[in-house]
Image (cartoon, rainbow, N blue to C red; front, side, top):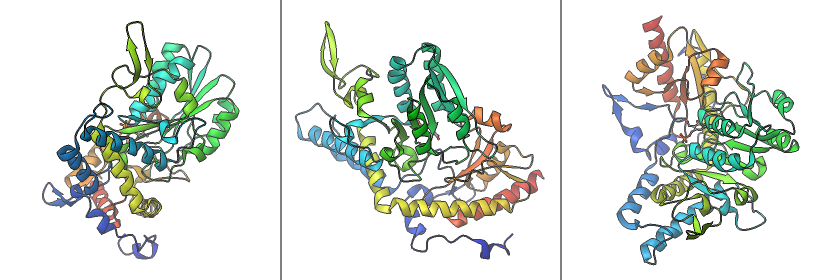
Length: 426
Ligand SMILES: Cc1ncc(COP(=O)(O)O)c(C=O)c1O
């Protein structure tokens, strides 16, 4: 294995100083167990945080803390401006288009993450638009967070869920999707990138077909935002959801992009302070979007640190980062193929940052436990995609997922670890 490698290593960008990138992540500097340097390959679950994001959180809590939209005092005004400025950055970060009325960033609603963004759309748009006879199309590779909210709202409204099949190599069957589309289809909800397989779905094509059938499109961008340039205007989607913690930002914060016209027509999600225009016992009127959807004191510090994460990624150069990750995925795939008895799960032609596999008869949990003892963090199990596991007739996978700070050495350590697993269980 060692001897054959040098000629076949796909080149990583020589100008991409991965050690300088790693130096910005305190969590990566640690050793685990018996002085094993940490190899962190669980980035699809959550990424580590650069010092810039940690510092931004600290600065907010040590010097800037105040509630937003409420105070006349200087700290509150500053916090409100910082909080709203991030909305503009996020709109820019994902290419939100100018609507007919109001600024592009009014279409950005802060949520706790992708899960809450999808639940918001299901509970507001879904509850008011869906009725018996309507259909919602979901793919077989969806994360549970893009299945369960739709199941629940379909049960409530009488609409029907239809499942877009996935091919053996883990690609969405676009022809089957086209065949499923009809005048009954109200929504197509698909993931941009599969968290289990890494498959990149052809969102532009899906949106074109869905719109031609009169359906709206919701895209789960949890796994695409960290790994590719996002332009929701170009993708043509109606709703787009993502999480900050998967793109080097804090946990508990994410965003929903929705077309202004749709957001305007949707009822509020939760009731409380900040989302109202006027309240009386005779009736309440609501604030304009996006505040209509943001009841109560929001995660102010996390919003501001999400802005820092987006700024950090922009400073890094998103295309450079993504090129590094693509080259590393090619390298990881080549190295994995050299291992006897390995079965790659998900071999789509277009893939991002995920290597899922099974090793002989070894249970993923056992493989993950051995790797953990060697200091290598991977994810094992069904990855919140049980219907996909059922389709592939497997209980789960071992998943190594990559980020901007991973190196060829990380992949080599993984490959060596897997050889150990094979020896132990072989
Ligand atoms: C594809 C996909 N969708 C949705 C989610 C849910 O994201 P969150 O838990 O941040 O809400 C995840 C998280 O793993 C995911 O990978």
